[in-house]
Image (cartoon, rainbow, N blue to C red; front, side, top):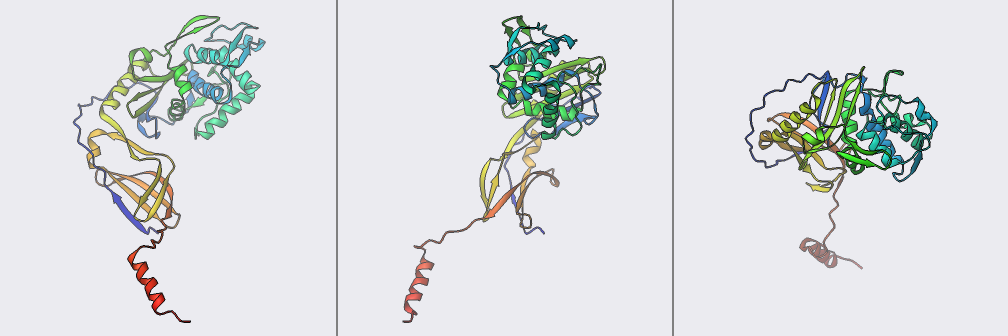
Length: 355
């Protein structure tokens, strides 16, 4: 039963926007996502499961960054002889730091780097792959199955995922400073192999790009996962089986940064409203077209049955979107000894006391 309802009206400004000519998008599947909230802004066949090729290496990198030590020295072992396809051409006995291998993984898409990273961090390739799948479950990538750290799909069918799931991964990875530093570098000079150039050409043609990863196999075709930022707006785009993907990512970013705006509606912390203290675990934000913010309202719905406050955004007068929910508690008002009413009660007690 809903015990209490109240509205907080946000004041917004009108914005005039250029006319948007719908792009011709030839990707088999793609998604544009708010990198902060994972809200889907646009997409096609976003849950179509297929091989995703080397954008799988984003997960490989994140496991290494979170579980490994970047300064660790990795000795290249004989397993490297099993590797084929895109490589940084490691040789048995060479020594790389884990950080160097990550640059080789993300800039040059080295399958040999992927194998050595997996063996070093996971102890074995199989154990590392299980770590990848465990992380996928944590990120709620429900249509994703990893079978190797590289994305190769000729022998084992490859890593299966969707545009939506890979966007969830990219949204997560692009909040990591180390990942952005490495994958957002246009070049890196290896001690053993000289200068490496990043295969992600979006970094050169679009200045707001912060990170990303390319991919290609004959089965998966071209795959691309990128992230970009403009002030407080953080976007992620994933395209699968898409020709002209770099140009498309740039056009989509330009459109959304021009037309859309992300706004923080409630800051993280404690909020007091009408006698209730609401504990906000994470800031509440939303992204939509700039010219629609002027009519938006925020609705906080107190439900005493489950002790939660539900946060809704009202768009276009009656379109209600659930943004989040938080625990709340009743505010206890401390009695003020100097309050005139308390003083009066104390006087009455003295006057009518017996004994």
